[in-house]
Image (cartoon, rainbow, N blue to C red; front, side, top):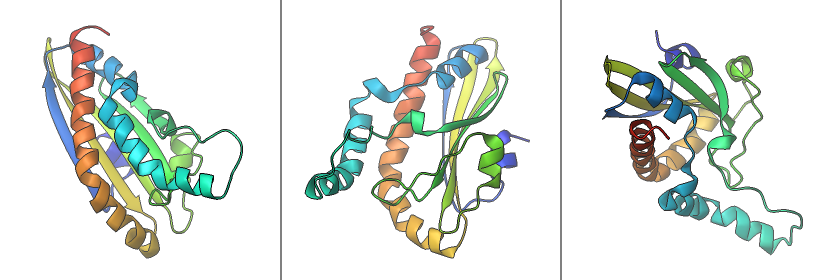
Length: 185
């Protein structure tokens, strides 16, 4: 049984993408673990567009202090890694809010125990399947479980709005990980 099936066996929304990579499983998993979208202009643009309402409200209300850092891979908590086969990252909160409504999740146990009303849990999993000594299939799956009917009602329109861009970003992420794994970066 895969880790994502243990952490979130039931879910309301999901998206899955896979890529066959000409690199050994250990290289692929290392590239997935070390992935950073910092160099992806489309990722930066999509996050900036997503965060525009929050930043505009901050300016409108003359909020001082350092601006909130842009959302990124560092917002995720590493929940568990199983060798070179699986890596599981998680988020919890109210993602549809302009500030993401993200709850602090310390580890896998905290993710499993999280149950704040009106919230959702999101898993991002990477599964590296060895095809042979030099080829690996990397699959990424996003699963979202809404903790109650209100969360599901609020999350659904957000999901359908972001899903096309999210899918494009996931495919670009896989391509970047594949490139890094093949070139030993």
